[in-house]
Amino acid sequence: MRSHTVCIVTAANQTGTPTAAEANFDGLVGMTHNYAGLAAGNMASQNNAGRISNPKAAALQGIAKMEAVAALGVTQCFLPPHERPALWVLRQYGFTGDDERVLADAHANKPHLLAQCCSSSFMWSANAGTVAPAQDARDQRTHLVVANLKSMPHRSIEPSSTNAILRAVFADRERFVVHQALPSAADMGDEGAANHTRFFDATNAQQPATHFFVYGIDTANPQQRPKIHPARQSLQASQSIAKLLQLDLAQCVFAQQHPDAIDQGVFHNDVVAVGNASTLLYHQDAWLDHDRVLNALAESVGKSFCPIAVSRDELTIAEAVSTYLFNSQLVTTPDGTMTLVCPIEVEHHDRARAVAQRIQGDPRNSISRILYLDVRESMRNGGGPACLRLRVPLAPPSGLAPSINSLRGIHPGCIFNSQRATELRLWIEQWYPNQLTPEDLADPMLLKRNRDALDSLTQQLGLPAIYPFQG
Ligand code: SUG
Image (cartoon, rainbow, N blue to C red; front, side):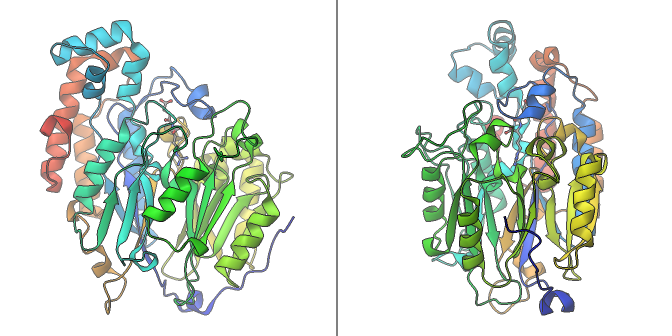
């Protein structure tokens, strides 16, 4: 296998001018954050099922993470939480009466369904949708395709709310197009940006970007499939997404996850790979047909392509799954180098930490810094730093520098800064519980509190009505 490829630290890196602005949209943790063991094939979700959660700590960890990433010089934004419990879903299942009655009946007769309707899984905004910036799209607008998340019942509740939220946040129709989720047909499983990476050459604006789509199953050719756990993303869905994003298909590379990796807990590609600009950090056993994938990427990304392989001898897939080394955010900082923002679990694991240090110390790549973050409440449900954010590359309106002006058209209430951090902390302190058990989910006061909290948040942020209860 190819490993430790020499990567030239580029002129643009040395001058410290990132040539593409990117905003990271973190999902705010919801106040019903809990451990219901809902995600088959996600080891952390399964192993922590039934544990008492701490929604307040989870949400505050999310704010601290945004602060830490913003302090690196990265543009940070956020998406508001969804309404939970999703009463409208319980009603679709035939529960009737007032809200209290619906909750009590669901709790008594379908507690698993109630847990699904209470999940805060929307906080993993890397699954909210797939994004391509204006410069890559035929119509020169930024496209966002909401993910249907049809593989997991608790996540299939998300798209309608995600759609409403993205439309409110990216309301400028001249710059942004928000596409509804793909139909929930059997062959259309889509989990959003967790299975998509955009590569570009930061030193050469003429070189077109490459879009890397990773899928778990080709439904037209399903022999290669996991035996134990579900393959959540299909090739057919990824191909439809590429079309909706208005991409040049010659610039798209499609790769299949290794079925054995899925069976060991790699339910999304971002559990075994992370990319940024022309750097790709990945595990040797991530994909089927590994050499073809690497060659296709090398050819498409061009001479700046910098693959950093981690072999199974350095870290097994099981260790990658338990530490989430690859679920780090890889971000370009204003000095032109990159920082790997890892979960603290990597620091606490000797072999994973050694890999991170080996990469940081290697002058042949641009990664100069490792930052460890505590997002433990999220990690216990299988969501690391990379899961918690949706990357939105921002094309500067022509003639303007790619900085503040590239945020034009994004709802100002959702742009993160230190004042917003203070306000969000106060809001969380006021509304969020310190602990939540499965019994608490049926409490009508939790529903009322959640609605009051979301009402107060949308007012604070100046957002239009985005929630079913506000409709
Ligand atoms: O879909 N966990 C999420 C974690 C999503 C992680 N996202 C990325 N890899 N980008 C999932 O498996 C667990 C919920 C529970 O068990 O209560 C959950 O939905």
